[in-house]
Length: 195
Image: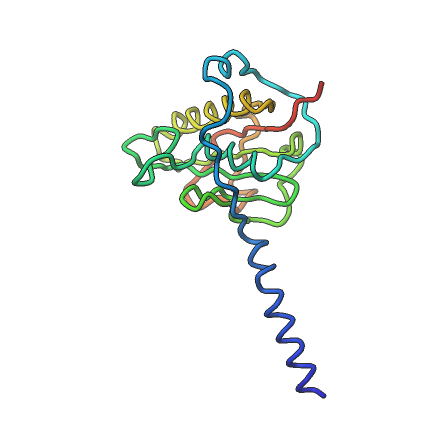
């Protein structure tokens, strides 16, 4: 009886393994690189939004947003936003209701950093992008600006609101998800605008 129970337990753990793996990584749908509104119209529509509906952003829209912001768009790993000497010294974290995630552009996926979202500073919108750069990178803020502008134009095209803040940058001593020697440079709250 003990052998049967042990075997059943082992089989149930094996069956649960794929589900556990899915909890630590989320493959995003392939980005739609042919959609969206014309650039000049997106520029005309781009604006800051400070009040958001709590509605979550679906994975396809989130994937398009992240690809527009910092995805790979050419062979050799080149990105949708420039980086000095192509060093790509920038990390995009995604804070949402189901936790904190790190965007992996080559795999176009999210890797879970924490099962719980970060605190109340970042609860104003269903998605908050957190941009991190090395502390000693003289071009870090320039890279972040390029990436959040790409995200802002995508938001205008997709009918989403967004606001960029440097006032909610996170203290690395309080938030241990940042690698050694990295800092947050800005956050970008994104969601459906509250009318």
